[in-house]
Length: 364
Ligand code: IPM
Ligand code: MG
Image 1: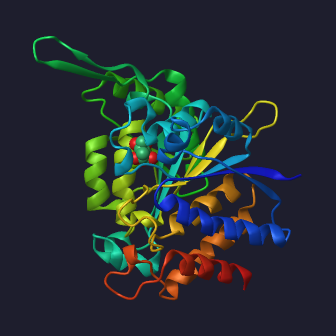
Image 2: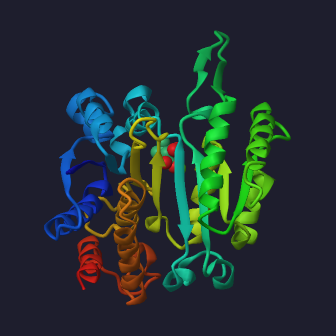
């Protein structure tokens, strides 16, 4: 039975890099390796320009009906002045919230060919393979109240609310522990229990969940220390589970260890449906819309293509095909192919050539 993908390229380089994924899908369908039907929609600034919203109700419906959403990137200076609730990022946050995508998987893998592109020394990052599991539908991103009030005396007061309930912590820690079982059996849980009540509860629940996984090495770490350890000795980590805000920050740091933000994919997953076992899912590169290079055909499509590989793996159980895509990426890098972001001053190729080369490896 055909499976439905909703493609949301978004803004900036999202449009260019999504085209490379479409070519991959076209080839896989033509070979009978997959049976995807594609729908397309608008999200972010382009949706605001077309509909006055960061995502239209119609596209939200398509997202809810899709087997997986493949998302590019949103935002750009053009939309700096649009109302806060219609800003490009609001489209992404609504997708996460309304699809219930509470589990955000952000692998940071250092390809051997790129170890020298990292800002850290090769020996610190070579072979690096970290998985950050970020809670994605709670915490300070969505907590209420969230407001700025005018105090009337020339002062204003801004409030964001960090809030977590037991079940939210429990389910994300379980995702992290289950994944650790397929990896090096090590989990760090990062919070700020030394200053935050939400951190105290986070750790209490995490420690309790960890008791169900006696085969894992489970360790608490303060989030600030986690940031420091990530740049001091990143290879000590296997899986790191943390809340929405710390996960946002720590995953950017982890990503950059690998040489370029342009390399890293992510998966955002919902809870399995009790009847069908299927989970809602959205796949997106960790990098943004890069308005400075948009439209020039020089963006790195690897994170986008690797995000699609995660979709093959996590939404469609096409593990062999996902492995092949990831291997094709590693192979083109080993051949010396580089887009500008990872070229380190050397020769670089454009978006299309990188995409075509990865496809060629797959076909071989
Ligand atoms: C990310 C991004 C988003 C976030 C922005 C675009 C809202 O930084 O996915 O990491 O803060 O979650
Ligand atoms: Mg971020």
